[in-house]
Length: 192
Image (cartoon, rainbow, N blue to C red; front, top):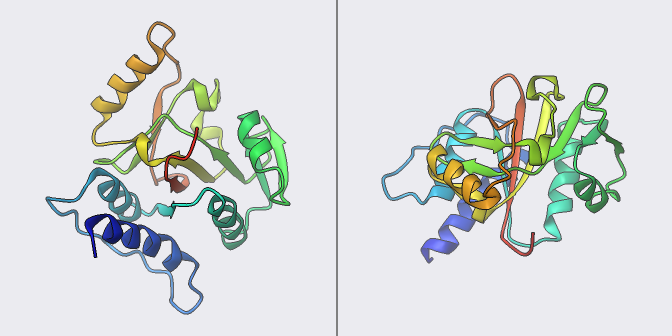
């Protein structure tokens, strides 16, 4: 099995074990190995901190993962701040409330970057506008692309500076598993 196939198998096991009805859900601690690539480091760090990692190598699987996740963690209503994301997932048969994070119990976001060595997600005003993370619902679901994974926060900040040049976003913050329950769905870069 090639390194790429091994990594994909690791990724698929993270998510599938969460949905398995035959196994009790236990927090597995994954050892970070010296030769682990940044995407594997992120997955292990996120899972080790109590977060949930899901991987999709096919774009049409994203909705299936979302449906299973929303059902499994019993989210009744989901909030979207980004109109494009709301439209993309409008057929999930769940309540979709734009900009009403106070009354919903789940939120789906995109992000700037996934920070591998911390197992955290970097957000900015591009995703969360002027909202405060502490006011978000308990269940936060982030959809990101493999290309958004960086090793360290310094790499993420350099990328933001390069991406936005003179119009840097505000409200830059990180979120990890702690006060909120964080699920991250990482997908191959199809188009974004």
